[in-house]
Amino acid sequence: MSLTDLLADLPDTAVHTLGVEVSRAELIASADRLAAVLTDVGLRTGQVVAAMLPNDATTVAALFGVWRAGGVYTPLNPRAADAEVAAQLETLTPVVVITTPDLAHRFSAHSLPIVTATSLAWTLTSRSQTTTDARQYDADVALLQFTSGTTGPPKPVPLRHSTVLDLIDRLLEKLRGGKRAKSSTPPMPNLVPLSLSLWAGIYQVLFAFRSGSGVVLMDRFSPADFAALVKRHQLRSTVLPPAALTMVLHDESVTDLAPLKIVRSITAPLSPVHAARFRDKFGVLVLNSYGQTELGGEVVGWSAADAREWGETKLGSVGRPLPGIDVTIADDEVMVRTPTTAARKIDPAFLDRLTEDGWFHTGDLGWFDDDGFLWLDGRVSDMINRGGLKVFPGAVEDVLLAADRVREAAVVGVPDERLGEVPWAFVVRADDLLSEEEVIAWCRERLTPYRVPVRVVFVDGLPRNDVGKVVKRELAALADA
Image (cartoon, rainbow, N blue to C red; front, top):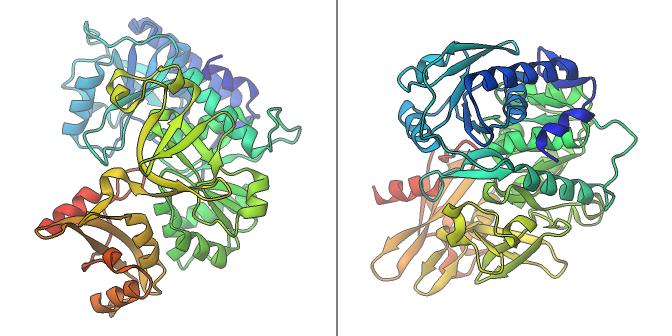
């Protein structure tokens, strides 16, 4: 089975936005038209198609059109600088580019066929000769997604039709309490508050289609629009990345999110402090989950039964492993084994992170509690070695966030001549009168001495990448400066 088969079970309305609705029939017809255009261009099975498109139904149709033509879809972020796009195109060697008339000029120097999209229609606007040294993958590779680049240069990760479907099915089985069969009740649409140039956004579309529901897309995220869409579609659950959740939490115009009951926090760890504040303000339970692009999707999450029993007492945990997924901790690092990694079906670029028996080094710090729930403590590369003592940034950040006048916080290790490294805190204040001395005093009352930050630096905002993760190397550079 391939991801193209997901179109078979869609409801009559496949895509909702604030102003437009697109039917299942319209979406399929558009995908078929694009597949015909790509075949005419000369696309062969396993070759790469790059796409720079808006956050609407056009992108969803492009996904399935590329797959129906046998291609490998690769999203390019319209917000990326021209130099970054050029570097990605050089890495990808795509056969064709799909974009909009407004963005087509960004590819004029690359001598590639260009297909432009307007209202679910496709036009071949440039017939430049296709590249002769194009990459070619096997037929199971569906998509290339660049990593977020928080710890190094972004790399394209091949994601397979079979892997993605397998992980989505395991997540649905967990959410449905062990039942793989679909419910007879039509599911509500899945709100996707993320860019479709990101794997997290695409994954949420595929997750919705696999469950038989449509999707609600946002051109750009705003708390007011989010609240309006929740009310319009009477959503009881949705997903939010931590940065968006924080925006909603601090937006004074948003006072009610009824009938919302559960938010699943995705793309980055969410502090239990923020989860508790969101629950207290809106009466909505916030549950973390965990996955990686390199693994193909979520591998740890919450079941409905777990949420009922443990949701309040384990705020901040990412849940328990999905059925058939192995997770363990080795030297404080989270290690994951899936059917794909066990079969060693992973790109050669990531083989250095794979053990001989199929365990994948995630690079994340974590631990299990006595009930089997996984808790994250940041990245292995972020762990601070203070004179031989380990400081886990996540634990210090949770203490900082619990302070009344702290809105956001991040902790990084800064070189020290005597101790090797010491923790510094970067804090976004909710009150300009909050002082460094007060923050350090707060930490001293709640942390062992070696974990207390030696400096607190107040900033207007934390640097984040497109999926909302804090880019700590930029904070380390700020400390160095």
